[in-house]
Image 1: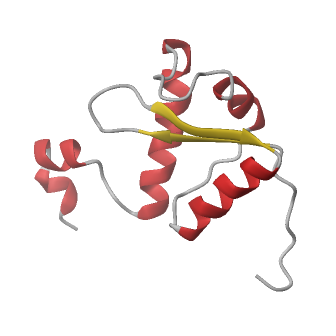
Image 2: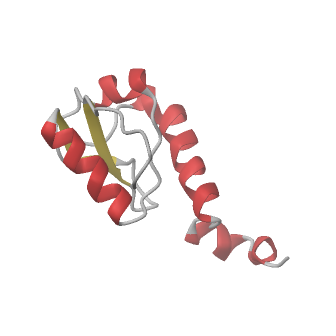
Amino acid sequence: MSGARTQAVEVAVALHWDGERAPRVTAKGRGEVAARIVALAREHQVPIDQEPGLVEVLAEVDLGEQIPDKLFVAIAQVIAFAYTVRGELPARLRERHPELGRR
């Protein structure tokens, strides 16, 4: 983006949530790797939440591992943020409450 300020990305962590089990860490890195993770997320229109303290804790989770229980509430808020940004609802919520999809 021309004219847009870019800030160096120090740490990035990507999560995957299947809607059933706890989210798991699918990518993480520092420096150039972090910048690439963020670039790919933007390229694929994946919402990005920038919470430095949370990212540092998530960076300690091994690749492929589920997030620890102590992060469930924080990550639930991130997932809710992502759905809100996209204007979507999780599939299970739509199935259980079809009236939510009607406006």
